[in-house]
Image (cartoon, rainbow, N blue to C red; front, side, top):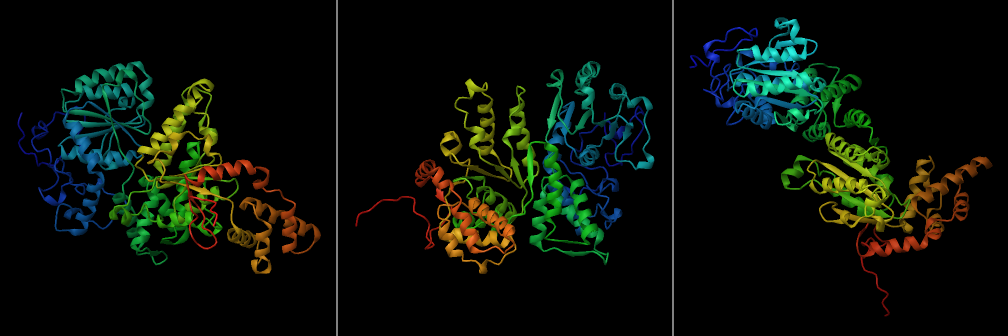
Length: 606
């Protein structure tokens, strides 16, 4: 058959209506959008050139400034800029899906929660290929996609039935793409499975394609060879930037709303929004504008709270609010300096400079010396959410559940990236991997293997902070280069660090540190960890409260004398830990003269 006029705009028609001649051949102009002129400014890719602004129904509901009569005009710079951003953002998905449809892949399966966003893109592809597009749901049946809501009519009430919807595709004589939404619950029905297998063979020889959109992947074994899964990622930086600009455009004329965003602030907001869907981004920006009547660089907390909802739903990861700043960490200057140099590691500027995102660090040290506090402080410094991986929730009694739990935790962390994944006391989770085959059927070994493979191969900006108190219990595979950027040893605080720790904790209790002899307290607390110093101050406060007097240096000193620090009760273990770390880890602290503590210590006789 021939194509008389490929440029005639298509109109949604009723299923079963005899197709006109211009729709019989869909491959004459594979990159041509029938609704637009052949202008180079609208090209998204060499193989696919949909005019993203041609149909007003495909534009964002918040965009009000574009003139529909000028969408095809390449001289309109604002419209072209918006279209080009969308093209760049979705070109990979466009290209892959376009090729699969032209290659007559019968059934495509797209896993995504963003049903509306996927449907818009598929509609644009159908227009570029000169095809009709229909959407199906259990509540509405088959309807033309892309038409105005007022003109949408059910093709037939019977098409609400999942199997009748398949029969409608068999009966159709149109060149069309059919979008089935939330069809996965019906893939347990043996009749539906059998009919889909027959449909797959039928679609290979027809200009029709079935696309299933679902938030979860569920493919029966009978259909594994018939269905092709297509990756549809979360919004890219370009899409998030465009959504941010749309929200700003929506409220900029309102005198009650103040927009104060520098280019750096915009970049930080865009980075913080990564991992959210466009609807979630629009929700959190709208909530911020309504509650604060402004939008500036300090609005990251609202975005993090939206990500907290995602973490809570996972049931495995815990979201930690960033209440501690880097100023809450006493000492550990080498470690803090390492983090300060990487505070912009996830920025576009660092990426353009050639810096790769850091993978993670392993913090080895004495209990109570601030390893967990560092994880919380870095979350605040980098302005990214802190997620704690609870290994107790990973291991389950059901066969295969533990491995699936760790994979689900990884997927959740990547979905809200950039983020920090904190694995506290990692030795308690993986210390038994060597004997896992005899103790738990190899479950710990498989979970560990999944985790370290992800550490090695991950490309998403998820920074891992793992802490450990007993390094000898960890399997040697964990220390391979490429899994952690560095290993730091957190030792007991020296005299200057103890003085700084006393100052921090006294301030936290609304006392003036200048009223205390910090040098005397630091000398009296030799061998104490930061946690033990905090507990001594807390104990002294209760003593002062009981005596109805103010907290004094003498009361804190008396509390210190009543405490037996861990450096005395576990001296042998701490000495062994120091001995191991002396030649194998970087010191987290500097000495009193400000020099880095040496890795080698020799008793020289001079």
